[in-house]
Length: 162
Image (cartoon, rainbow, N blue to C red):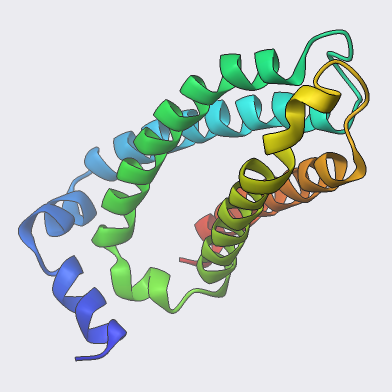
């Protein structure tokens, strides 16, 4: 069984078919997905700008991250669930779509960047918590910012190609 066959099987299930054929289900789920994504990107933006040393310079990095992390993860779960429902409704179309693939690659890279930051750079946050972030933190924040802009852009591009 190929990935394409798996996508076909998925989109032929009853819930994805209902989403695809309904006049209101797809747009409602898409609205939830976009609103959750706004919360994800907005909360990540606050952290990234602090890591870049552009905003909240007087606030400890740990405090900024501690405040934003619950919002980020909660909204991410909602966006991922809603996005999965959207994907399932046209899985073959999305699987073949370059902007969708670009979005997924950037999402994986953003996850790797976050894991790298938290496992290496953030471990020593006590040393730079109130001061200017080290180069590794600024690089992680910059990469994150670029990747999330790309994720949003590619996601919007999907709307014009599927």
